[in-house]
Length: 228
Image (cartoon, rainbow, N blue to C red; front, side, top):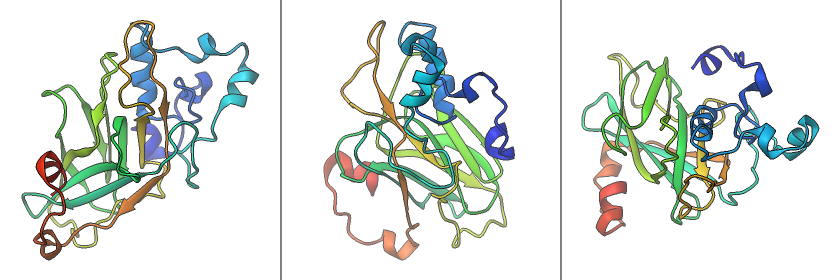
């Protein structure tokens, strides 16, 4: 949260990039926790030297100019729709190619407003740690279990009174907006079983108006419950 609020990286060791994806995100904390249970490798366990580590980096998604990263060959769509109350929005994650996907960490910067509450809509109660400051939030599972979560509805965000909800957007240019995806959604992390992750390019989808949300849903079954 400090890095997202100040723009100053507080981690000296490897600039906090413990998952070796070229950037400092909340997934680095999750990665370190997994390493304690032999479910992930730290950079000094994967590379012969610091130079080899630097040469492996993809360039990093968490910067002002979004870039395509190694591993996942599709962008990720972040969208939001109006929630149950006038001051709430639901945040959704989806692969741009609409294939099955799973995420490990998410961070969303909104165009304005002050967040008052973030309710995660996946995992068991309290399983996913969600933090927020100002108009951005981030969330990940930090116990070291290596848990991942399916694309779809991920969180309901409540804003403070006075927020311009009609003008609210997801800022996909901000370095506070990213999604850490697991490359293979069928990979199950365990002792000595590591699952690769990526920081794909993120694209935001405009918020739907109340009238647009009344249009017939194009999905059926469980997809209808997640996306409509």
